[in-house]
Length: 150
Image (cartoon, rainbow, N blue to C red; front, side, top):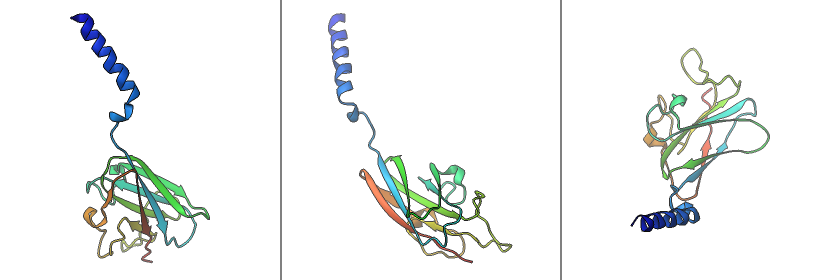
């Protein structure tokens, strides 16, 4: 009896080595193309959120963050290893590379910003639901248009 159990266990282990993809969770990639930058100074920082917790102002609650130095090339940022689902992206054109969303004395942003879904901006930032995008399959691509209020 013990021999049969050990043989079956060894056979199952060997088979699982040949079919590792059967055990791996499906992953997706989200590619974000940035359009409408006012200039090429500083960096662009993107925060990817999986829910409304902290969106869009609390970057430390984002599931992934990336900052990219601005060059003469089009800005394209990839977020990899995502489970299929709903996400939202907040983008900051950090023109002085200080890592902060700078504002004037009235609280109006003086640096560019953008959101997935390119929602209409009213008083205050948009909600997670207004900016949510569906990520499914191996690759999803979106375009975010930058906005400047001043």
